[in-house]
Length: 320
Image (cartoon, rainbow, N blue to C red; front, side):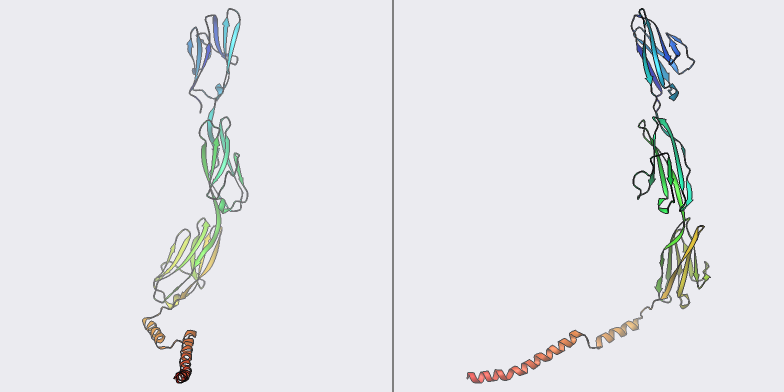
């Protein structure tokens, strides 16, 4: 930041007979007499101990050597001071926002002034970006990709004041690609929705087809809902005629793509069917391995009891 004013002082004593302030070889003041025409230069004091001038509203052109010349009875003396003017950074030129197709090259420019000369850096404002992308006034990107779109921030700093920043928005255009094509199964008479999601810059326009015939918005029982990246084909009351293969087409000025999506019949079980299944389950013997094993084990246990009975009777007869 340029100071509003700067004071130059020169200490003197009673031996001084003449005093003057000079900027290089130009006399500014000689005693109380002003020699320069610049209204910003004023005399602050001219006493037996102090001789001072002030330069108001200092700018960079005031930088340089200033000399206090003192004449005594014996010999002249001089005292010199060098004024250094510091200026906070200022960005005076920067590229405008740009829209470019993927794969092309871009060049961004950021020109800044200040004293000392500011350091200029470029940074990509993105969660995936790390550090600076350029430590120069110029940023070159070869073969730009869609991931490199977004804001680019130019920063100029020289430690005189806080850095100044400006941003440039880079839009990368690319053709659509379908990221999700979602079909569904729906019973007759129910509501069904086919969904098509596509990413593109500029945003994609969607169209729906069945058997190469485009579906027009407003068809009875069918509605198309389009958003910038999503399209839905909604059937409010699905009939047998509605089942089949549908094509979602996404397009913008750079190209188009499509995906096939199926609306298929989903049999909804009736109450009589569910009742019949319950009766069948209850009346039919279980034919699984456990059932066979259980019957087999029961038969073995009964056979074992019949075989042990004669041995028990023989044991009792011998005992008595």
